[in-house]
Image 1 (spheres, rainbow, N blue to C red):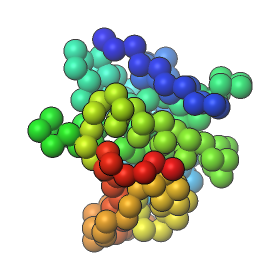
Image 2: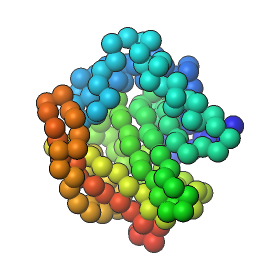
Image 3: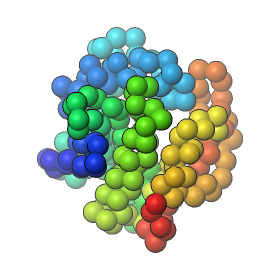
Image 4: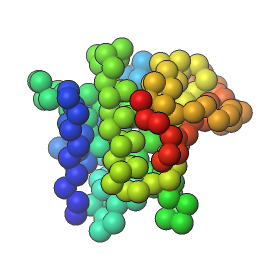
Length: 182
């Protein structure tokens, strides 16, 4: 098992473990953080356990292809959110990122900080060629994060996200290994 811990100025990013289940459940239970998420709000802590068990199993594989990271504030050790990096086919050296931040940490630059870190890890350590991300068209804050780190908006996928308020279009972003990271 890989013992992955990434550090930024304010954050620690590490592979999730079952000890994180209560923090993850609280994060998934906040209506504001669920607005643009397709997972939905889990009905119980047990449901959250069932959701994250495959994530933890994937993190413990001999070769990790689907990283799910817990984000902690280094100052107070509080849980900030989740960050994922799902690798595609080795031949294409491609991955997709996703993230979900606790509402208490919105608009503080932390999403930008953690996305920059996972991009650096993906390109510099995993030797990826391309990293992609998508976000609901109404999720202006997430689109701003992706643009701040230097990802390029490549297109629009129509009616792809089943959100609580109905089907949503998604902006598609990507960065290539040769692109400037901001």
